[in-house]
Figure 1 (cartoon, rainbow, N blue to C red):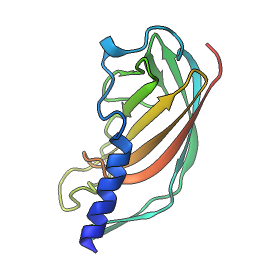
Figure 2 (figure 1 turned 60 degrees about the vertical axis):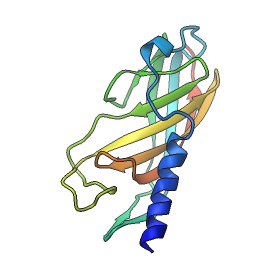
Figure 3 (figure 1 turned 90 degrees about the vertical axis):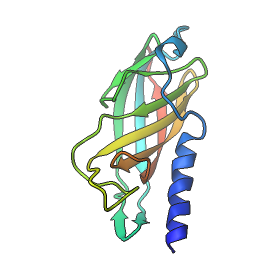
Figure 4 (figure 1 turned 30 degrees about the vertical axis):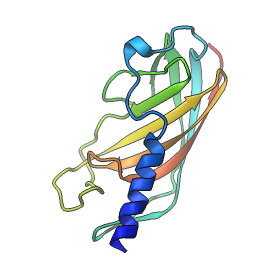
Length: 155
């Protein structure tokens, strides 16, 4: 059972980071303006249970909407990131939210690594996008998975 939990955790983390596993650097951002504008990001968290070691965590199945803006390849909006976030010329965005102080680590449940953060891996076209997210506990990549859809609403 423990091996199965580890495999599930690795699968979720791998699926999130399969396309882009690091943030887009400023010098690699899109500067054509094709992604620039106002975007609506809709997220749906999967209602599941995650067992990591002796900890059983229930993912809420939360849904919501966030507004983001892309200007000269830089992504800003409703979520605060650890560092500036950029979209590359192919429409890839890897977003890591600021770390909150509440929670615990699902990667190492007995650790003292409190907090949570949101990881997003997004692929945009010029007018729409899709992606995956994880509401990660602690400093690792394990947590509650979700899906993203994005729609552009003009410049």
